[in-house]
Amino acid sequence: GSVPALDGALTTCRACPRLVAWREEAGRVKRRAYADWTYWARPVPGFGPQDAPLAIVGLAPAAHGGNRTGRMFTGDPSGDVLYAALHAVGLASRPTAADRGDGLELFGVRVTGPVHCAPPDNRPTTAERDTCRPWLAREFQLLRPTLRAAVVLGGFGWQALLPVLRDAGWQLPRPQPAFGHAAHVLLHDAGGELHLFGSYHPSQRNVSTRTLTPAMLRDVLRTAGRTAGL
Ligand code: SF4
Image 1 (cartoon, helix red, strand yellow):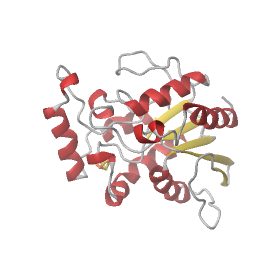
Image 2 (tube, protein in one colour):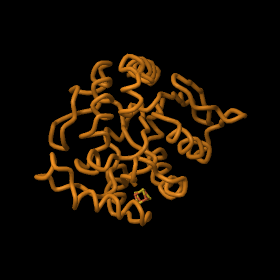
Image 3 (tube, helix red, strand yellow):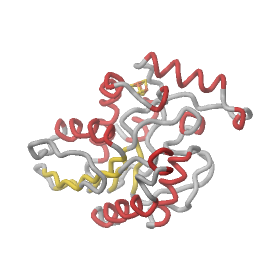
């Protein structure tokens, strides 16, 4: 298996009936500003090189963001904040993400999520998270040879990723490490180390309340990038 093969298989998944209905409904009804778009309206695969030393794990695509453009964090306010921060710390070729043809490149970073289909109210259920987990597990398995660090954006992604890491053989500290902004946990397995970082999610709410400022996000990404050798 390879990451592109995984991405291809993922885009045909229909395992979560509620999310299949929602992603397709968003593509039919659309938002007025995007009336000319043909929405992707399918599972949104991860984005970035398959030999990335750094993974970024978000939440789920937005109905009129990633679900429209077909690329993670592309076309919504969270993505605007994330890609600006990645560019500022030297991990992306440009500060904005418009669509799949915009030429944006990530340097050593793979952006993915624990749930690959847009959920109502941006809130997947825990059952949907568990149903989607094998995709995340497979992606981490494929990235593993080069993976040195992961940044998890928000508590939902943190809860989703920890069992993936444990099942893949990483030793998790006990008690299980708690999510928090700038949390940093070092995990070990037989072959080496993985640095796990937490950051608040760059959701519109977190950004507008300044729970997460662009500088806070840049700091975590810069530290994680350096730790990963980028
Ligand atoms: Fe499949 Fe994941 Fe989408 Fe559910 S959320 S339909 S498991 S890709």
